[in-house]
Length: 71
Image (cartoon, rainbow, N blue to C red):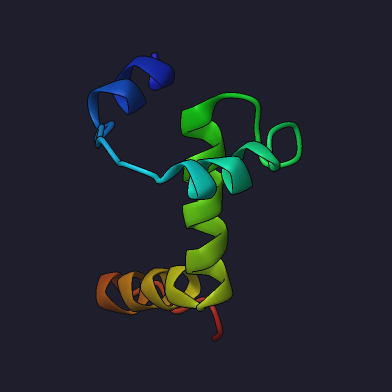
């Protein structure tokens, strides 16, 4: 059931890569995923994590909802 609910909230986008960019992405197959979408999604999430955008967003949402995990 949860999987069905998650699929309803999925956002699909179309992106364009140059051949050179795609060649770099292809080199990550098996390491960051097996399917094209999985690889690109994991690259984006890794970048967001590296820039601390993911943790900042989670902390912000927790503070707004009153869930302060540090105390």
